[in-house]
Each structure stands twice: as C-alpha cells, then as structure tokens.
Length: 484
Image (cartoon, rainbow, N blue to C red; front, side, top):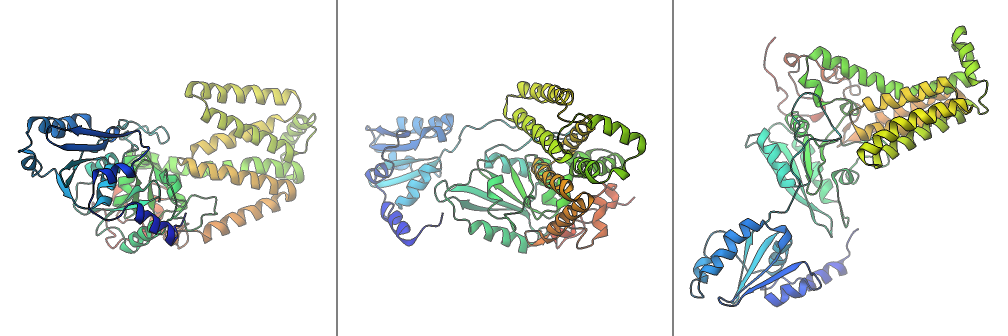
C-alpha cells in the first residue's frame, strides 16, 4: 500500500531523528508486553531488548556477566570495547532493537550490541523436492542460514549479495545474489529496481514476492521458479541466473526463467546422462498426457467415434451404456472429484492424507462405475492424467497444468478436436507472448537456440554442456572446458 506524504510526516514525528533517550524509546514501544526493560542500578545502566530475538548464552556471556563484574567507574571503559556501538540517533536505536540488538543506556550515551540469534528450525530434507541421489539439505526460514548454505557451496568473492527491504509494516529483508562476471548486470539491476518499486504492507513468502515482480501477473503460468534445495539454487547461480532470498521464507526464487526449466530436476544431473535424458523426456510426455488424455476422451466419445478402433468401440459403448450424462459432464465430475481428493490429502496429516488419497480414489471410482455415474474407460483416463501430473517436479507448474486441463475438457466437449486444436493454439500463443525478466519464456524454442536443447529436452553428457544458457545472457558464456 503506497504511503502518502502526510503518513510519512506523521511517521517522522513519531520517530524524530534526534538524540535518543530511554523515555523516548519506551514511549515508542508502549503496549509492547514482550519488550524487556532491565535496570542495573548499581552502575546506572538500563537495557532494552526483545528477549526471544537474542541468543541467551551470548547475551549472558557478553553483556550480563561483564556488567555485573564492573563498578560504576569502569562502565565507560567496558563500553569502549568494539562490540558496543555508540549511537546518537533515536531511529537507529529503535530499528536496532527491532533487529535483535540490545540497547544500553548509561547517563546520556546509548550503545547497541548485536545479539540477534532467533530460534529457527534445523536444516532438513525438502518435503516438496525429493531426490533419490544427491544432497538432501534444504533452505529454512532464516535468511542468514540460507546465505550460509549458499556460501558453503560457492566459496568465491565473486558471489555478490545486495540487501533490500519490502513491506512498509513487516520490513522484510530481501537478498539478491549473483556471481559477478557471470550474471548479466542488466538483469540484476532490473530485478533490484522491481523489488524497490514494491509498496505493500507485508510480504510473507518468496512465492508471494514473485507475484509482485512478475512481467505478466495475470498469467496462470509461474514466471519465476522457486526451490528449497541448496544445490538447485547454486546451479542456477553458476548458470548465470540471479537468486532472491526472502527472510522468513524457505523458498528461494531465480530469474530469468524458461517454461522448460520447470520440467528439470537436480536428480537429472546425479545420474548417468542417458538415464537423466530418458526421465526428462518422460516428464514432457507426462505433460502431454495430463493435458490431453481426458480432453481427448471427451472429444472422441462425443464427436469422433470414427477414430476409435472397432473392438475398442464395443468396449466403450458397453461401458457407457448405463451412464446418463454426456461425456463432458461425466469427465468434469470425475476431474473435480480427483481434485477434491488431492486437496484433502494435502491438507490432512501425512498418514491420514495418504490413506484418504488411496482408499478414497479406489472406493469412489469403483462405486461411481457400479452406480452408472461414469465409465471404466474414463476412470482410466482421469487416473492416468492425475498420475502424469505428479511426474512434473514443480508443484506450481503442475497446478497450472491441472487448471489448463479443465479448459481443454470444456473446449473438447463443445467443439471436439477443433476445440482441442484451438485450445492448444491459445496456449502456445500465450506462452510465446510471456517474458521472464524481459527474456522470452519459451527460450530456447523461440528464439531458436538449438545449442541449449542439449540441457532442455535431454540431459547431454557433461562434456557437451560447455556453455551457459543463452537466456541468462552471461558475459562469460563458457562454463565447461573438459574434453570428451
């Protein structure tokens, strides 16, 4: 939400840039029961801080114990240590307390000492991006831990980090990461400027942030891929792309991105290239199945019986003999049922969710066939489409494809194969018009870059992957100099 000038003036009146005093700081944090005000009268020192933002051991060792050991004449000497920073601005003191620092008031001087050590969950395996081979560490909600995970893998001074803030109320930290000399600086500056232009009260997650910097926010396709895997994020950095890390979010986004990037997995590079290529091709086939299978059933059984072999036509006719609905309604009924089961399984606890998904699918499918609400062939088509959607590694892309499937089913039910062709044409036209950070979303198909196909439609041997993706427009194109 954009602030007007009166709001900014009012904020300046609440937090004037003047010499800080204890009473002024306490007034700013009035009605904050979680603020701790601690007094040590023997030496005339007052401490103000938020306890849960501090590391208790460090706070006791570096602040409390030294203050309890000195007398009033030695306090000035203690505060001359490097960890105590003298501050003369009230805004800096208030901001420091909110950032996990301890403010110490002694006579007319105010010092800040950084004790920020909030509680966070330990590094664990990503539940949404599992792999069979390769590392299993993933990002957490702490930006400092996420940066440390990346720094551990990229031990280079060329890895640069730009710190920004979003959210007029939450003031969440956003870190933009790129490798100097590899990333295109025009892309870096464009991404930084887009984030600076965001005027909103709160941003809670990286998946929420990217919706504010999308080139086409109304498109159903994700334009910025997100990942919780450290190795996947680092591979994008080395490939010339830019990373965005939001404090409080385990999802790290990258830019620019291609539509085909959502069909690759880190697992592809940890296996032999032939196997990795076969699996990647299988994902593209799964994409076609999940989009077309049910829609093709509706189209053929409604308008184009001549496309069905005679033996199969008899089976379909017998299967549909008791079904009172036309194929369009029948397919929509089963697709909605599958989506309900999918959402129910995702929202319930893990063990119950798995049971609901398996038992619910079997029971409802069998009961629907016996009740004459649907045919056996449609159950197979819907189940195949649902299984194929799980093959796509990216959940956000899988969700977008599932939504497209409903549109194609309706077009197929209204106009048959003509409707399907119209639907595919609209999808291709829409994809061709999308951009990600001002680069084509369907690279390397348009613009035509056949060299990039070796790491898009297949996973070529490492000796053949000599150049970075053309979409990143890296000034240093060569990444691999090994020979066969």
